[in-house]
Image (cartoon, rainbow, N blue to C red; front, side):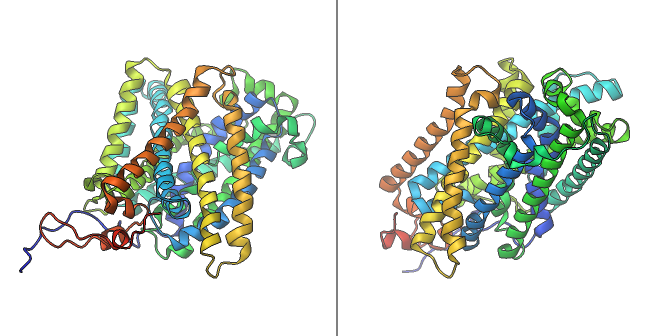
Amino acid sequence: MSIPPTAPSKMSAALAKDRLGAPAVGFFILAGVAPLTVTEGVVPSAFAATGLTSVPAAFLVVAAVLAVFVIGYLAMARRIPNAGAAYALISKGLGKPAGMAGWLVAVVAYNLLQVGLYGMIGPQLASFAADNFGLHASWGVWAFGAWAVVAVLGLLRVDLSGWVLGVLSVLELVVIVAVTIRGLAHPADGGVSFAALSPASLHFSSLGPVLAVAVLGFVGIEQGPVFSEEARNPKRTIPMATYISLGVIAVVYAAASWALVVHYGSQVVPTAQGPDGTGMLFAMAPGLEASTGRSLFLTSLLAAALAFHTAVGRYMWAVGRERVLPAAMGTTGSTGAPQAASIVQSLLGAVAILLALGMHWDPIGQLFFWGGTTGGVGILLLLTAASAAVVRYFWTSPGDEPVWRRLVAPAAATVLMAVMAWLCITHFDVLLNVAPGSLPTKVLPGLFGAAAIIGASWALVLRHRKPAAYAAIGLGSVALSQRPTTAVGTEAPSSATRTGNAS
Protein backbone atom coordinates (compact mmCIF):
# COMPACT_ATOMS: atom_id res chain seq x y z
CA MET A 1 0.00 0.00 0.00
CA SER A 2 1.44 3.34 -0.99
CA ILE A 3 1.57 6.04 1.64
CA PRO A 4 0.43 9.49 0.49
CA PRO A 5 3.01 12.23 0.83
CA THR A 6 2.50 14.47 3.83
CA ALA A 7 2.64 18.23 3.92
CA PRO A 8 5.85 19.65 5.35
CA SER A 9 5.60 19.91 9.10
CA LYS A 10 5.91 23.29 10.77
CA MET A 11 7.02 21.60 13.96
CA SER A 12 10.60 22.46 14.82
CA ALA A 13 12.83 19.78 16.27
CA ALA A 14 15.34 22.36 17.42
CA LEU A 15 16.02 26.06 17.64
CA ALA A 16 18.66 27.71 15.47
CA LYS A 17 21.94 25.98 16.32
CA ASP A 18 25.47 27.28 16.88
CA ARG A 19 24.49 30.94 17.24
CA LEU A 20 25.57 31.69 20.80
CA GLY A 21 29.07 31.63 22.22
CA ALA A 22 29.92 31.93 25.91
CA PRO A 23 29.86 35.78 25.86
CA ALA A 24 26.36 35.91 24.34
CA VAL A 25 24.98 33.36 26.80
CA GLY A 26 26.63 35.29 29.61
CA PHE A 27 25.00 38.49 28.41
CA PHE A 28 21.56 36.86 28.54
CA ILE A 29 22.31 35.75 32.10
CA LEU A 30 23.57 39.18 33.16
CA ALA A 31 20.62 40.93 31.55
CA GLY A 32 18.19 38.64 33.37
CA VAL A 33 19.93 39.26 36.66
CA ALA A 34 19.83 43.02 35.89
CA PRO A 35 22.80 44.10 38.06
CA LEU A 36 22.05 47.83 37.88
CA THR A 37 18.40 47.28 38.81
CA VAL A 38 19.50 45.19 41.79
CA THR A 39 22.24 47.53 43.03
CA GLU A 40 20.04 50.61 42.59
CA GLY A 41 16.79 49.11 43.85
CA VAL A 42 17.16 45.81 45.69
CA VAL A 43 20.29 46.63 47.72
CA PRO A 44 18.87 49.78 49.39
CA SER A 45 15.62 47.86 49.96
CA ALA A 46 17.64 45.12 51.69
CA PHE A 47 19.14 47.64 54.11
CA ALA A 48 15.76 49.26 54.69
CA ALA A 49 13.73 46.07 55.14
CA THR A 50 16.20 44.23 57.38
CA GLY A 51 17.71 47.14 59.30
CA LEU A 52 21.07 45.37 59.01
CA THR A 53 24.47 46.31 57.60
CA SER A 54 25.39 42.68 56.78
CA VAL A 55 23.87 42.77 53.29
CA PRO A 56 27.30 42.47 51.53
CA ALA A 57 28.05 39.26 53.45
CA ALA A 58 24.58 37.92 52.59
CA PHE A 59 25.31 38.31 48.89
CA LEU A 60 28.57 36.38 49.28
CA VAL A 61 26.87 33.57 51.20
CA VAL A 62 24.09 33.25 48.62
CA ALA A 63 26.66 33.26 45.79
CA ALA A 64 28.56 30.43 47.53
CA VAL A 65 25.35 28.37 47.81
CA LEU A 66 24.56 28.95 44.14
CA ALA A 67 28.11 27.98 43.17
CA VAL A 68 27.50 24.61 44.83
CA PHE A 69 24.07 24.33 43.19
CA VAL A 70 25.25 24.88 39.62
CA ILE A 71 27.81 22.05 39.86
CA GLY A 72 25.17 19.32 39.67
CA TYR A 73 22.69 21.45 37.73
CA LEU A 74 25.13 21.99 34.88
CA ALA A 75 26.43 18.42 35.00
CA MET A 76 22.91 17.06 34.40
CA ALA A 77 22.13 19.78 31.83
CA ARG A 78 25.17 18.63 29.82
CA ARG A 79 23.57 15.22 29.50
CA ILE A 80 20.08 16.56 28.80
CA PRO A 81 20.33 19.67 26.58
CA ASN A 82 16.85 21.15 26.39
CA ALA A 83 15.45 24.67 26.03
CA GLY A 84 13.09 23.71 28.85
CA ALA A 85 16.12 23.58 31.20
CA ALA A 86 14.84 22.87 34.73
CA TYR A 87 11.61 21.40 33.34
CA ALA A 88 13.55 18.72 31.46
CA LEU A 89 15.79 17.96 34.43
CA ILE A 90 12.86 17.57 36.82
CA SER A 91 11.00 15.39 34.30
CA LYS A 92 13.99 13.08 34.01
CA GLY A 93 14.92 13.05 37.68
CA LEU A 94 11.60 13.17 39.53
CA GLY A 95 9.12 11.92 36.94
CA LYS A 96 6.89 13.42 34.29
CA PRO A 97 4.10 14.74 36.59
CA ALA A 98 6.73 16.55 38.66
CA GLY A 99 8.27 17.85 35.42
CA MET A 100 4.99 19.36 34.25
CA ALA A 101 4.46 20.84 37.71
CA GLY A 102 7.91 22.43 37.46
CA TRP A 103 7.21 23.64 33.94
CA LEU A 104 4.09 25.55 34.95
CA VAL A 105 5.83 26.98 38.02
CA ALA A 106 8.62 28.20 35.71
CA VAL A 107 6.19 29.76 33.24
CA VAL A 108 4.25 31.55 36.00
CA ALA A 109 7.45 32.75 37.70
CA TYR A 110 9.20 34.00 34.55
CA ASN A 111 6.03 35.72 33.38
CA LEU A 112 5.69 37.49 36.73
CA LEU A 113 9.30 38.63 36.47
CA GLN A 114 8.94 39.74 32.86
CA VAL A 115 5.61 41.57 32.98
CA GLY A 116 6.41 43.00 36.41
CA LEU A 117 9.27 44.93 34.86
CA TYR A 118 6.81 47.00 32.82
CA GLY A 119 5.54 48.39 36.13
CA MET A 120 8.93 50.03 36.64
CA ILE A 121 9.79 50.76 33.01
CA GLY A 122 6.58 52.74 32.41
CA PRO A 123 6.89 55.24 35.29
CA GLN A 124 10.66 55.61 34.83
CA LEU A 125 10.32 56.34 31.11
CA ALA A 126 7.45 58.75 31.79
CA SER A 127 9.58 60.67 34.30
CA PHE A 128 12.66 60.63 32.05
CA ALA A 129 10.73 61.88 29.01
CA ALA A 130 9.01 64.63 30.98
CA ASP A 131 12.22 65.87 32.63
CA ASN A 132 14.43 65.79 29.54
CA PHE A 133 12.13 66.27 26.54
CA GLY A 134 8.96 67.82 27.94
CA LEU A 135 6.92 64.83 26.78
CA HIS A 136 4.03 63.96 29.06
CA ALA A 137 2.14 60.68 28.87
CA SER A 138 0.84 58.12 31.34
CA TRP A 139 3.05 55.27 32.50
CA GLY A 140 0.89 52.84 30.53
CA VAL A 141 1.78 54.49 27.21
CA TRP A 142 5.50 54.18 27.89
CA ALA A 143 5.08 50.64 29.20
CA PHE A 144 3.42 49.63 25.95
CA GLY A 145 6.24 51.29 24.01
CA ALA A 146 8.77 49.13 25.87
CA TRP A 147 6.50 46.12 25.42
CA ALA A 148 6.54 46.65 21.65
CA VAL A 149 10.35 46.79 21.58
CA VAL A 150 10.61 43.53 23.55
CA ALA A 151 7.95 41.86 21.39
CA VAL A 152 9.87 42.68 18.20
CA LEU A 153 13.32 41.79 19.55
CA GLY A 154 11.93 38.50 20.86
CA LEU A 155 11.21 37.42 17.27
CA LEU A 156 14.66 38.29 15.90
CA ARG A 157 17.76 36.11 15.72
CA VAL A 158 18.80 35.18 19.23
CA ASP A 159 22.44 36.15 18.60
CA LEU A 160 21.39 39.69 17.65
CA SER A 161 19.40 40.03 20.86
CA GLY A 162 22.39 38.62 22.72
CA TRP A 163 24.73 41.32 21.45
CA VAL A 164 22.20 44.07 22.18
CA LEU A 165 22.07 42.78 25.75
CA GLY A 166 25.86 42.51 25.77
CA VAL A 167 26.43 46.19 25.06
CA LEU A 168 23.89 47.21 27.69
CA SER A 169 25.24 44.78 30.31
CA VAL A 170 28.85 45.92 29.88
CA LEU A 171 27.82 49.56 30.22
CA GLU A 172 25.86 48.72 33.37
CA LEU A 173 28.83 47.00 34.96
CA VAL A 174 31.19 49.85 34.07
CA VAL A 175 28.90 52.39 35.75
CA ILE A 176 28.42 50.24 38.86
CA VAL A 177 32.18 49.78 39.22
CA ALA A 178 32.79 53.52 38.78
CA VAL A 179 30.16 54.45 41.38
CA THR A 180 31.45 51.79 43.77
CA ILE A 181 35.02 53.13 43.54
CA ARG A 182 33.78 56.69 44.19
CA GLY A 183 31.84 55.51 47.22
CA LEU A 184 34.82 53.64 48.70
CA ALA A 185 37.09 56.62 48.04
CA HIS A 186 34.86 58.85 50.20
CA PRO A 187 34.19 56.88 53.40
CA ALA A 188 32.20 58.14 56.34
CA ASP A 189 33.99 59.50 59.41
CA GLY A 190 34.65 56.00 60.69
CA GLY A 191 36.83 55.14 57.70
CA VAL A 192 36.86 51.88 55.75
CA SER A 193 35.73 48.77 57.59
CA PHE A 194 35.55 45.23 56.19
CA ALA A 195 33.15 43.95 58.85
CA ALA A 196 30.10 44.01 56.58
CA LEU A 197 31.81 41.57 54.21
CA SER A 198 32.39 38.95 56.90
CA PRO A 199 29.90 36.06 57.23
CA ALA A 200 30.36 36.51 60.99
CA SER A 201 28.22 39.64 60.71
CA LEU A 202 25.25 37.43 59.83
CA HIS A 203 23.63 36.61 63.17
CA PHE A 204 21.30 33.62 63.20
CA SER A 205 18.38 35.62 64.58
CA SER A 206 18.49 37.94 61.57
CA LEU A 207 19.71 35.45 58.98
CA GLY A 208 16.32 34.75 57.42
CA PRO A 209 15.27 38.21 56.22
CA VAL A 210 18.67 39.30 54.90
CA LEU A 211 19.30 36.06 52.99
CA ALA A 212 15.75 36.07 51.65
CA VAL A 213 16.27 39.53 50.17
CA ALA A 214 19.77 38.77 48.87
CA VAL A 215 18.78 35.58 47.06
CA LEU A 216 16.33 37.48 44.85
CA GLY A 217 19.22 39.48 43.43
CA PHE A 218 20.58 36.35 41.75
CA VAL A 219 17.40 35.30 39.95
CA GLY A 220 18.39 34.77 36.32
CA ILE A 221 21.68 33.00 37.01
CA GLU A 222 19.99 29.69 36.15
CA GLN A 223 19.20 30.67 32.56
CA GLY A 224 22.32 29.26 30.88
CA PRO A 225 20.90 25.79 30.06
CA VAL A 226 17.86 27.45 28.43
CA PHE A 227 20.21 28.26 25.52
CA SER A 228 21.92 24.86 25.37
CA GLU A 229 20.28 24.02 22.02
CA GLU A 230 21.43 27.30 20.45
CA ALA A 231 24.95 27.47 21.89
CA ARG A 232 28.16 26.56 20.15
CA ASN A 233 29.76 23.64 22.00
CA PRO A 234 27.17 23.80 24.82
CA LYS A 235 29.07 21.42 27.11
CA ARG A 236 31.75 24.08 27.38
CA THR A 237 29.86 27.29 26.60
CA ILE A 238 27.04 27.00 29.16
CA PRO A 239 29.21 26.19 32.22
CA MET A 240 31.75 28.88 31.30
CA ALA A 241 29.06 31.54 30.88
CA THR A 242 27.29 30.52 34.10
CA TYR A 243 30.35 30.42 36.34
CA ILE A 244 31.79 33.67 35.02
CA SER A 245 28.44 35.44 35.34
CA LEU A 246 27.94 34.18 38.89
CA GLY A 247 31.41 35.32 39.89
CA VAL A 248 31.00 38.76 38.32
CA ILE A 249 27.58 39.28 39.87
CA ALA A 250 28.72 38.19 43.34
CA VAL A 251 31.67 40.59 43.30
CA VAL A 252 29.60 43.48 41.92
CA TYR A 253 26.79 43.05 44.46
CA ALA A 254 29.07 42.59 47.44
CA ALA A 255 31.31 45.51 46.44
CA ALA A 256 28.45 47.91 45.68
CA SER A 257 26.59 47.14 48.92
CA TRP A 258 29.85 47.34 50.88
CA ALA A 259 30.57 50.73 49.28
CA LEU A 260 27.20 51.95 50.58
CA VAL A 261 28.12 50.83 54.11
CA VAL A 262 31.53 52.49 53.88
CA HIS A 263 30.24 55.71 52.35
CA TYR A 264 27.20 56.22 54.58
CA GLY A 265 28.63 54.64 57.72
CA SER A 266 26.20 54.43 60.62
CA GLN A 267 23.59 56.25 58.53
CA VAL A 268 23.31 53.58 55.82
CA VAL A 269 20.15 52.00 57.28
CA PRO A 270 18.37 55.28 58.20
CA THR A 271 19.17 56.67 54.75
CA ALA A 272 17.84 53.53 53.07
CA GLN A 273 14.66 53.76 55.11
CA GLY A 274 14.18 57.43 54.26
CA PRO A 275 12.80 59.16 51.16
CA ASP A 276 16.21 59.19 49.47
CA GLY A 277 16.75 55.44 49.80
CA THR A 278 16.31 54.59 46.12
CA GLY A 279 18.90 57.20 45.12
CA MET A 280 21.64 56.06 47.50
CA LEU A 281 23.82 54.38 44.91
CA PHE A 282 24.13 57.26 42.48
CA ALA A 283 24.32 59.83 45.27
CA MET A 284 27.79 58.45 46.01
CA ALA A 285 29.02 59.71 42.64
CA PRO A 286 27.18 62.87 41.59
CA GLY A 287 27.87 64.11 38.11
CA LEU A 288 28.58 62.11 34.98
CA GLU A 289 28.46 58.69 36.65
CA ALA A 290 25.10 59.42 38.26
CA SER A 291 23.46 60.84 35.13
CA THR A 292 24.80 58.00 32.99
CA GLY A 293 23.71 55.46 35.57
CA ARG A 294 20.17 56.79 35.72
CA SER A 295 19.89 56.52 31.94
CA LEU A 296 21.30 52.99 31.97
CA PHE A 297 18.85 52.05 34.71
CA LEU A 298 16.15 52.31 32.05
CA THR A 299 18.04 50.15 29.59
CA SER A 300 18.77 47.68 32.41
CA LEU A 301 15.05 47.23 32.93
CA LEU A 302 14.46 46.81 29.21
CA ALA A 303 17.30 44.30 28.90
CA ALA A 304 15.95 42.26 31.79
CA ALA A 305 12.49 42.24 30.20
CA LEU A 306 13.96 40.93 26.94
CA ALA A 307 16.01 38.27 28.75
CA PHE A 308 13.02 36.93 30.68
CA HIS A 309 10.85 37.10 27.55
CA THR A 310 13.44 34.98 25.75
CA ALA A 311 13.62 32.46 28.60
CA VAL A 312 9.88 31.97 29.06
CA GLY A 313 9.37 31.74 25.30
CA ARG A 314 11.77 28.81 25.17
CA TYR A 315 10.09 27.08 28.08
CA MET A 316 6.76 27.35 26.27
CA TRP A 317 8.26 26.26 22.95
CA ALA A 318 9.86 23.20 24.55
CA VAL A 319 6.52 21.64 25.53
CA GLY A 320 4.93 22.66 22.24
CA ARG A 321 7.62 20.72 20.41
CA GLU A 322 6.71 17.68 22.50
CA ARG A 323 2.98 18.32 21.78
CA VAL A 324 2.24 18.49 25.45
CA LEU A 325 0.76 21.84 24.46
CA PRO A 326 -0.79 22.49 21.04
CA ALA A 327 1.78 21.76 18.32
CA ALA A 328 1.65 25.37 17.09
CA MET A 329 3.59 26.38 20.21
CA GLY A 330 6.53 24.30 18.97
CA THR A 331 7.06 26.27 15.74
CA THR A 332 9.92 28.62 14.94
CA GLY A 333 10.11 31.54 12.54
CA SER A 334 12.61 32.19 9.78
CA THR A 335 15.01 33.62 12.37
CA GLY A 336 15.03 30.37 14.34
CA ALA A 337 13.27 32.00 17.31
CA PRO A 338 10.23 30.29 18.93
CA GLN A 339 7.65 32.31 17.02
CA ALA A 340 4.27 31.26 18.45
CA ALA A 341 5.58 31.00 22.01
CA SER A 342 7.11 34.49 21.76
CA ILE A 343 3.86 35.95 20.46
CA VAL A 344 1.83 34.29 23.22
CA GLN A 345 4.21 35.63 25.84
CA SER A 346 3.91 39.12 24.35
CA LEU A 347 0.13 38.88 24.53
CA LEU A 348 0.36 37.90 28.19
CA GLY A 349 2.50 40.97 28.82
CA ALA A 350 -0.05 43.22 27.13
CA VAL A 351 -2.87 41.71 29.18
CA ALA A 352 -0.89 42.31 32.39
CA ILE A 353 -0.34 45.99 31.56
CA LEU A 354 -4.02 46.45 30.67
CA LEU A 355 -5.07 44.70 33.88
CA ALA A 356 -2.81 46.95 35.98
CA LEU A 357 -4.26 50.01 34.27
CA GLY A 358 -7.84 48.81 34.58
CA MET A 359 -7.47 47.84 38.25
CA HIS A 360 -5.57 51.07 39.04
CA TRP A 361 -2.65 49.16 40.56
CA ASP A 362 0.41 51.00 41.76
CA PRO A 363 2.75 50.12 38.86
CA ILE A 364 5.93 50.15 40.96
CA GLY A 365 4.63 48.87 44.28
CA GLN A 366 2.32 46.15 42.99
CA LEU A 367 3.12 45.27 39.38
CA PHE A 368 6.90 45.60 39.64
CA PHE A 369 7.76 44.98 43.28
CA TRP A 370 5.16 42.35 44.12
CA GLY A 371 5.38 40.68 40.72
CA GLY A 372 9.17 40.57 40.65
CA THR A 373 9.49 39.38 44.22
CA THR A 374 6.92 36.64 43.78
CA GLY A 375 8.49 35.54 40.49
CA GLY A 376 11.90 35.36 42.14
CA VAL A 377 10.58 33.12 44.91
CA GLY A 378 8.99 30.89 42.27
CA ILE A 379 12.32 30.47 40.49
CA LEU A 380 13.97 29.56 43.79
CA LEU A 381 11.32 26.87 44.37
CA LEU A 382 11.88 25.62 40.83
CA LEU A 383 15.64 25.36 41.31
CA THR A 384 15.20 23.56 44.62
CA ALA A 385 13.15 20.91 42.81
CA ALA A 386 15.73 20.78 40.01
CA SER A 387 18.50 20.21 42.54
CA ALA A 388 16.55 17.30 44.06
CA ALA A 389 16.08 15.93 40.54
CA VAL A 390 19.84 16.04 39.97
CA VAL A 391 20.41 13.96 43.10
CA ARG A 392 17.91 11.26 42.07
CA TYR A 393 19.06 11.22 38.45
CA PHE A 394 22.73 10.68 39.26
CA TRP A 395 21.84 8.17 41.96
CA THR A 396 20.33 5.94 39.27
CA SER A 397 22.60 6.96 36.35
CA PRO A 398 25.98 7.96 37.76
CA GLY A 399 27.93 7.45 34.56
CA ASP A 400 31.53 8.63 34.84
CA GLU A 401 30.74 11.75 36.89
CA PRO A 402 32.92 12.12 40.01
CA VAL A 403 31.11 11.62 43.31
CA TRP A 404 31.52 15.31 44.23
CA ARG A 405 29.70 16.44 41.09
CA ARG A 406 26.95 13.82 41.02
CA LEU A 407 26.18 13.35 44.72
CA VAL A 408 27.92 15.49 47.33
CA ALA A 409 27.41 18.93 45.73
CA PRO A 410 23.82 18.27 44.52
CA ALA A 411 22.75 16.83 47.90
CA ALA A 412 24.26 19.76 49.80
CA ALA A 413 22.73 22.23 47.32
CA THR A 414 19.29 20.66 47.70
CA VAL A 415 19.34 21.14 51.46
CA LEU A 416 20.72 24.69 51.22
CA MET A 417 18.30 25.73 48.46
CA ALA A 418 15.37 24.29 50.42
CA VAL A 419 16.43 26.30 53.47
CA MET A 420 16.62 29.51 51.41
CA ALA A 421 13.24 28.81 49.84
CA TRP A 422 11.78 28.24 53.31
CA LEU A 423 13.33 31.51 54.51
CA CYS A 424 11.75 33.39 51.59
CA ILE A 425 8.31 31.93 52.24
CA THR A 426 8.61 32.51 55.99
CA HIS A 427 9.68 36.12 55.52
CA PHE A 428 7.47 36.90 52.55
CA ASP A 429 6.04 39.88 54.44
CA VAL A 430 9.54 41.36 54.63
CA LEU A 431 10.10 40.80 50.90
CA LEU A 432 6.80 42.49 50.02
CA ASN A 433 7.06 45.12 52.78
CA VAL A 434 3.54 44.31 54.01
CA ALA A 435 2.06 43.32 57.37
CA PRO A 436 2.73 39.74 58.52
CA GLY A 437 -0.16 37.43 57.75
CA SER A 438 -1.74 39.84 55.26
CA LEU A 439 -3.55 38.52 52.20
CA PRO A 440 -0.67 39.03 49.69
CA THR A 441 1.66 36.89 51.83
CA LYS A 442 -0.76 33.98 51.40
CA VAL A 443 -2.15 34.47 47.90
CA LEU A 444 1.05 35.23 45.99
CA PRO A 445 3.15 32.25 47.18
CA GLY A 446 0.03 30.13 46.76
CA LEU A 447 0.17 30.76 43.01
CA PHE A 448 3.01 28.26 42.75
CA GLY A 449 1.21 25.61 44.73
CA ALA A 450 -1.74 25.97 42.38
CA ALA A 451 0.55 25.92 39.34
CA ALA A 452 2.27 22.75 40.53
CA ILE A 453 -1.05 20.98 41.11
CA ILE A 454 -2.42 22.03 37.71
CA GLY A 455 0.78 21.00 35.91
CA ALA A 456 0.97 17.59 37.57
CA SER A 457 -2.75 17.02 36.98
CA TRP A 458 -2.36 17.82 33.28
CA ALA A 459 0.42 15.24 33.04
CA LEU A 460 -1.84 12.61 34.61
CA VAL A 461 -4.62 13.50 32.18
CA LEU A 462 -2.21 13.04 29.28
CA ARG A 463 -1.08 9.69 30.65
CA HIS A 464 -4.61 8.35 30.36
CA ARG A 465 -5.87 10.22 27.28
CA LYS A 466 -2.76 10.89 25.19
CA PRO A 467 -0.09 8.40 26.23
CA ALA A 468 2.18 9.39 23.32
CA ALA A 469 2.21 13.01 24.50
CA TYR A 470 2.77 11.89 28.10
CA ALA A 471 5.71 9.73 27.04
CA ALA A 472 7.24 12.74 25.25
CA ILE A 473 7.34 14.95 28.35
CA GLY A 474 10.90 16.15 28.88
CA LEU A 475 12.31 14.36 25.82
CA GLY A 476 13.07 17.51 23.81
CA SER A 477 14.00 16.94 20.16
CA VAL A 478 13.78 13.17 20.70
CA ALA A 479 10.02 13.60 20.99
CA LEU A 480 9.78 14.37 17.26
CA SER A 481 12.16 11.66 16.14
CA GLN A 482 9.99 9.13 17.93
CA ARG A 483 6.83 10.21 16.12
CA PRO A 484 7.18 9.03 12.52
CA THR A 485 4.19 9.88 10.34
CA THR A 486 2.74 6.82 8.58
CA ALA A 487 -0.14 8.51 6.80
CA VAL A 488 -1.83 11.83 6.53
CA GLY A 489 -3.26 12.79 9.88
CA THR A 490 -1.94 9.72 11.74
CA GLU A 491 1.12 9.02 13.78
CA ALA A 492 2.91 5.83 14.62
CA PRO A 493 3.17 5.12 18.34
CA SER A 494 6.33 6.54 19.81
CA SER A 495 9.03 4.16 20.91
CA ALA A 496 8.51 5.37 24.46
CA THR A 497 4.85 4.40 24.22
CA ARG A 498 5.61 1.03 22.63
CA THR A 499 7.96 0.14 25.43
CA GLY A 500 5.64 1.51 28.11
CA ASN A 501 8.23 4.01 29.25
CA ALA A 502 6.10 6.36 31.33
CA SER A 503 7.83 7.22 34.51
